[in-house]
Length: 340
Image 1: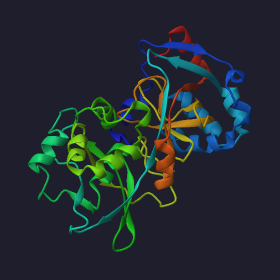
Image 2: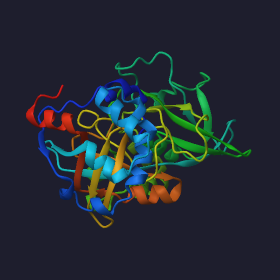
Image 3: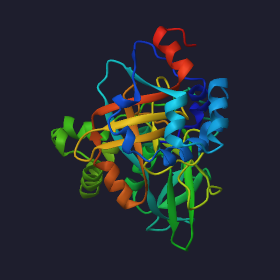
């Protein structure tokens, strides 16, 4: 999920081409009065200082004085619903914990790589299949750590960051370090296309189990995703904090969400109404992005670190509604088409 390379675009503000904009009232937000707005305000303060637009700068200063949180949001913001031609879709992500070693052996033999210096942003490099079938990265000293499971490596690339518990004790943290410039494609969709599973059966856990049961076909399946993610060490992040999001700040369990910066201001508050078996009605902060997160009503909810967080995140694939909280004057300008 961590896409720091997009930061300059994200902070420039959303571009809302081909979208419908509706101003709402707070009493039109389902569950608004029942949320813990103080939690949301604390998370907002983690990144609002990085927003250099005057509208946001002044609001961040007010927020820093620790006002009544609910009154703060209601006084200075207006709910804005932005819709495009795509249905709402909410999913979950998490920070995996992997097992690794700083040296290669028979158990730990699947590397996490740093970004090769010849890869240039915006210029496609080798695909995943081309890299793996030609050993294009081997023997170049780009290895950060060695992992015991290739499926874990793949899903770490999907998530974008994680923790590696070392066999010698201790651990390291890794974050997004770049990519090969190819678009992400879903291996779950590929399993469906091959007739192996029905759409309602596919989840991250199902994919992981199938690949482990079918190592040769599984390796081929993973290589259908041309995208390949490289990593960097981020050990400066305290162990009790979440991984770094696209704003290079720690994200927060159950309060941070990844969005499409073409529609949502990165760092701004959003009201999430996720339906499904486990409904969520919560004020979140848009602090991350992702290559698969595209559209005005598309969001990825951060569920935390470890296996349990991964289990919860993997169950989420629901509809609902995403409503932005926008500074009042900007909200009216958006509604009239005058926002720049």
